[in-house]
Length: 461
Ligand code: ADP
Ligand code: MG
Image 1 (tube, rainbow, N blue to C red):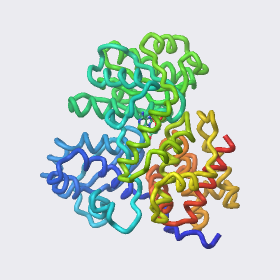
Image 2: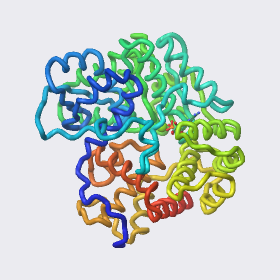
Image 3: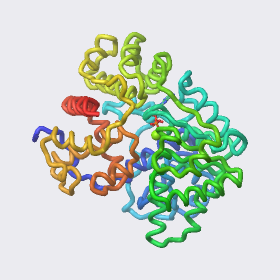
Image 4: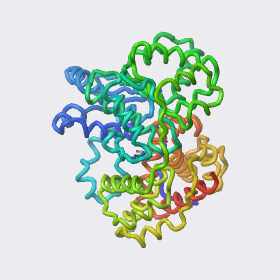
């Protein structure tokens, strides 16, 4: 166990990483000179729940940032956190601020030439980055229509289909598109499980109920991701129903994603089901080979790596019904190439993926419990240690790998993964993922560990 890589002993909440990731998103949207002068000097001070406190050097800048950039910043933070982030700007010149990643990491061009293995660039969830094929073109077109003309047709829009087929991607694309076309339009994305958690918190803490409603009602588009989670208590469903009706009568657009059609969501009240069925229901099915190839090509282009077609076909034929898994294989190949400095061609890909087990009908994602169990037994430690507080290196390492796999292999948000692993903060989860992501590209033994674990998990689903 001791030869485990030196993991930084400390897994303290890494708001720097969180901020860094958000800035990378904003960087693509703001012209360089403005980015350098207005955004780069900002510092993330604190993240508590969904409130992100960001320090601005002076009140003059605070005004400008608040007027011109706060929406972009909130959106980027929301993307990173997987929930709607509330941005709070505060004038701060204190030395205790976290060093911003923007200042540390060179721009994208320089980065690819630097020695250290870069973490994979994050794909933006936009319409441009969504590859359209027969399996998803109806969903794509409907989503685009909503983004362009919210409140017109197809209300609500209900998109359903298996895990890893692009539902969340489309929801984010709607948000991104609508907000960039018409910046004043308010769009809210929410994971249904977060909606439920927030609602329960409002009830139990006797918080202001009107404020809760307002957060949803004052939007032109509201996107509820993974609505199948709504199969819970009557109180929650009633609240959802009220909000749904208010939005609907205000001509706001409601978009829902689900891993199954409304009729198959257990315990869903009839009146909600019939509302869902009263709009437009579209399913996304697994992509054909051509679409899978196009997705791999796009991703390779994004990562600036050359991969010959026969090698891409080999990868694309391994996974048929989950694009997340497909991307995972490609990542493994790219990671291996960077690690060993080899070219990517068919024999190389065959070799790297030879032990990769991919089920033919693996539309199910593993549960967090399954991942946790297998990781614990792989490293020979107790599950309690994995979720516990100990900071010994092997434990921290195993924990970080587990969190990384949970993010790579499931739909779970940073928040829910953190909660699962002993109530850790979402920024801790993000930090762990970043860390393992870059270790995979630098250390052979880590590459090996993650490959073996992924195989074990796939076999056990
Ligand atoms: P879901 O929400 O249906 O489980 P996601 O939207 O999270 O799936 O998609 C999983 C991964 O696959 C994401 O990285 C997403 O960008 C990618 N993906 C899915 N469909 C497409 C597509 N048509 N084109 C490009 N990437 C896609
Ligand atoms: Mg999703």
